[in-house]
Length: 529
Image (cartoon, rainbow, N blue to C red; front, side, top):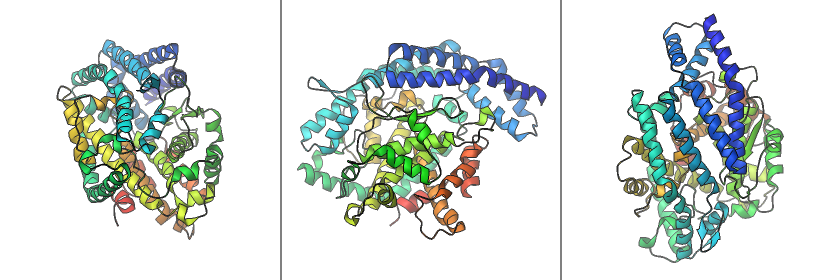
């Protein structure tokens, strides 16, 4: 037992500063976009992999885990370390080559600006065209311009996937997807099973909503049904719901002070975010990543969000979402062992972020924090949130089923596979022989990650159900509205944040909501009439 304790102490001592420097280099690369920042990020990533590539230490951990360790805290730390070592096993030369190739592609993504005519445009400008333009030709030009980044990186990405698979096969796995699920305490069979269940429970709602969407678009764009194409759905991937209802949330948010709103909201539920906002990079800039994320630099409170804010509902949702990640880390117990001082799992932090992101379409949120008083401005909110969740669930099916199949057989016709899945899950009958799939950055920067978004949505609905039906009743709150109740923050801190990584993800869900992860609460909230 003492040997295990000493090993963990020594490990933390040699990795704590490295982890901090790595996170900071990632932040600098994505916010500044300078060559030297990406180079440092790549170097530190390789140093990190060098630590966890140590075969001797990996075998030590495996042997200790096979023994009967009575101290559950030590055993859990060993298991977390085992997963980290597992993900970095194999030939170090291959690991470093992967890092260098990944970094180059990430830089390409972050510096890429679509070109329309002779003008380079931002993602925000593309999104504006996609949602507001009614000329089909202009929509197509904007959509195709954005997809060009897929053509630029597809071959490089396939080479990385081959290298990733090579590493995994040498460790006894069928492919990299399987190995990375194992390293995150998940199984491919279980993921496929729950995705099949979600497909089933959303199928009827999606088909009804798709008819409604298509009817709206045909009327708005003055085209025939058979002319509908991917660029008509107001989003580059049809992962966001089109604006088909009369309520225009962008108008409601247009004149609002986003930062003051989120500060007031998070304060009233007992999770102040001023410290996060102070260190964040919130507005678009040349060279900066056009995406959004939140990062915990040091596991001691240095937490930052990257966004590219505009006065739209989408960016209010994004800001609430990223700060949701932030409060998870900020309000975690500081006396947790360093190894366990992080979220229980990717899906649990996504769940918290998605739970808060949903508030941008919440009636009580808009009334309380945005001072929206007229009922006619709020009448379609429930329909809009349902549309958003069902559409995203079907898009997630495309991403996850494609990525699974991509690693199982990267030599198949991937362009054909992509559009077959789009047709099956999103109802868009289209094909072109170009690597449009490769224009999604997650395949390179967050491999074997996307399934956690949908699992997070399921958990968010489970948390919502537990808050309304248990926590509110126990605290004798008559209204199901919790957008300004301190008990929300108290519940999340005590039941989820404070646990850190002390429990496997599904055990944490059971402890905090009384059940293992269920799809039924998502179905009750968004699919049942």
